[in-house]
Each structure stands twice: as C-alpha cells, then as structure tokens.
Length: 115
Image (tube, rainbow, N blue to C red; front, side):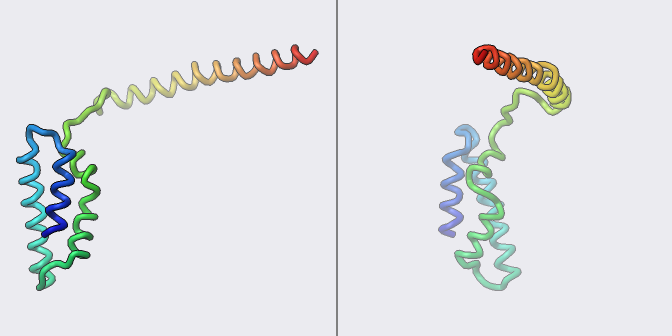
C-alpha cells in the first residue's frame, strides 16, 4: 500500500484545506476497495506494478485534486454558446479588418519611403 499512501499524500498537497480530510478519506476508501476487488479477482495481492497501473488509471495527483476543487469559471455553461458566438463575431469583424488595414498601411508606407 506504499504507492497508494504516496499517491494520497501527493493529492493532499493540492486539495483545498477545509474539506481535505473528507475528500482524502473518500478517495482512500475508493482506492482501497478497488484494490481489494482486483486482489479478489486475481487471487493474489497486487504487485507494485499493478498498483501503479491502477493509480495511472485514476490520473496524475493534480488531476485528481482538481476534480474536488471548486469550479472556477467566469462564464457558466448556459452563457458559453453566446460568448463563443460573440467572440467569433468580434474576431471576424473587428480584429481581422484591423489586421488587414494595418498590413495594407505598412505596405503602403514602405512603398512611399522607397520612392
């Protein structure tokens, strides 16, 4: 269980402080029950390589901790389609014309400087 303990310790460093103990207890119980199920199915104790494969399936400790972090988004899922559409409009009708006009002005200025 050494690998699982190290995995949990690594997750602990990235989980928010208030609910850290509850989250780690839940994660620990989940991992241990999964190990027990695999041991029963295999008929032997899991090797370090098998434990490592199990932990890899759950992902990097940062990823695991991020699942328990509060959602931090400026735009909710209800407004995201409108935001994306507005962003496309702004890029197409504002940024692109400015870039084209600026390029044209640079080319014109260079040709006038040469003359």
